[in-house]
Length: 478
Figure 1: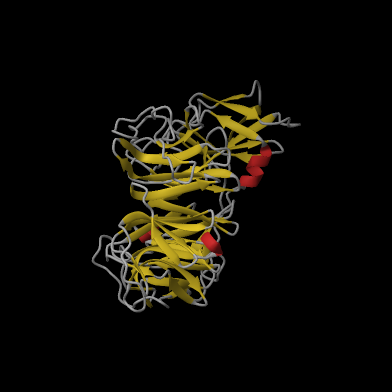
Figure 2: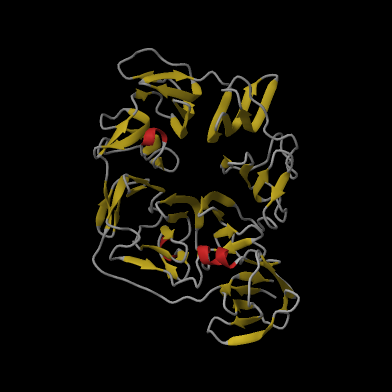
């Protein structure tokens, strides 16, 4: 039996004049590489190192010179002055001290107006218009997290025989020595190193803990999806990701951990939700009714909004809450909003991000979207979230801030025969509850006795749980 509790929605829909993507190729060559796997590829780092809005990956500048890193300035993309092998690609960039570190795979690198080749490397260092290769024996870095004097890298390996460290490696002394950050092997590791899977994302938290994606644990293992290392032992979040599903990204929004990916409740009611979920300190909670019909590959926060970006699935039917928005929508704590555009199959934005508070999108190929020519790199002409063509999901019934303010947890999630209510602080006057169906009809009500509610008589379905004087609360029942 599957019973799901959530909040009530009403529909809001606006359809006015067209807004859409417009070319933003200033400083870039009009024809980019469509031959490499996936076509033209760039990523964004908004308000990144040196206070700039960056693009990184592999592209051709306006003179058809191969570049890896650039930034937005005075209405143009300005590339850092180095070039090299056409297959070079930057995977990340971060400031450490006063130096810009550029991660990726680099061969035949040369500074502009210089003929001296730099040593092939996986890490370039850039300072005051000077560029040099790192001699760290690191192979194919994909993600990096820096906290104070500590740098943690996710890559193929630290390869300096006889010392070889796979996947995760850390330094606390400016790269003089590198170590495995974990003194205990991950509980479900079965590989030569750490079997975290192909998606590379980790973060050193403010307290020194390490948060990492982990998609290689077997389905049903509590560590699958995302795990945390506290310096002494590993911790799971809930019961893990079930079925053939993955966590693709994580982000922090209003102080809460948010995960996204391909997981859904149809695959297993034990999954955190549909495509996206929030950890409330005890269990996973959906944002609205989640996101359906695609793989949520990217989360990022801009201003006061959490953006969720999807690929795969049918672009016309990405379901954010109770509305359909293609590819990208923003969560404000209560509802999803975005502009619904008609993309040719497979030609929605491959990556999105902001520069100078303007939304940009990278397309793998030139195409036509809503009758407009869309080039490789474009800006959104208008307000994507609040503009005249934006649509929003219904009010979710309770915002994250309000829900946290209730100070209430309900577990287990999913529940079976009964649910247990836990008050995080003293709450006056909470003595009764009501359970509604999605039509708003009361199916069950009563007094809260012993902090438990019996729900064994409910049929499978989606329900709403309300408390007198405290509004609604969301959870799942199996």
